[in-house]
Length: 351
Image 1 (cartoon, rainbow, N blue to C red):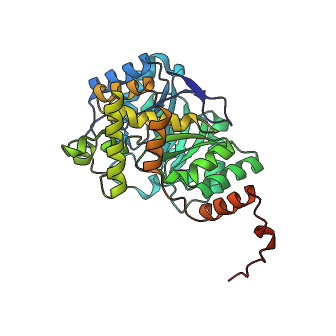
Image 2 (spheres, one colour; image 1 turned 30 degrees about the horizontal axis):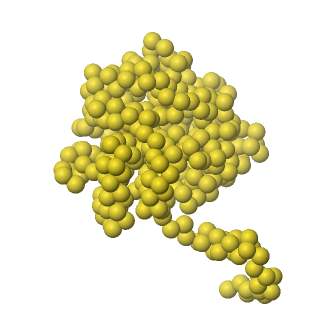
């Protein structure tokens, strides 16, 4: 396992994988029991993993409670990230959801208690609630950092414009900085390439990339069975719903056969290579349900795709960048080619 800083705006050192613990517990009716969770945690730690990602709503709080047992012996060795926005219980309470200062304070205190610790290394705002002003979120975060309850804070599943505005506000107000972003990213979900990831690279933010296997689709297992996230949680899953996704799975399976690696390892190896080419650290979040799946993820650390394999996967999975990117690319190509017509073109009237 290699290590990097979480973005260029912090000195926080993290392992190149984050262990997602959404499967620690069975509160959702699916997941891993205490013993299997312990085996996964120990295996990850033995491999050199230090970055652990949880949330207050994972398994309705059970994930944090289980994790507390595992980190107690050497708390400071691990970088523990948790999140708030959603309720930690099945019953929704209007005062215990969202991103208000009130819920933020309630949530961090509850997470600290469940985790059995007096600080959280990295605290994520899990989702935008479309209600709470960004100034309130950032000011609340600054207070939590000043109090020592959290060390760093970041934004999960926020659009690029909100993250960039938040980062700018925090800098201008001299509040605790926004350390990074968390977003879904895999061969079958690359829309973050349009705005979120270029923004993270430009601002030097860390990026944690969840669901690198597309909810299991990229393992190829759903071609023979629906067993897995598709049948258990029935959420955050991709299916072969269009021709491109079928072509992507075909390419992954073909390259797996060519290399002798598993389809999961090929898929994660592509994400790792994409991360290695980024201008800021990108960290895949792996979310195994058992040690067999974890071993597959760890095996990907030894898989080196050839340039041809990486290009094949990149091309088959590419998403249209849309406006203004396509227009800008066209103009940029002409400028680099010395197209004199650019100078001669009159300005277009604004409609």
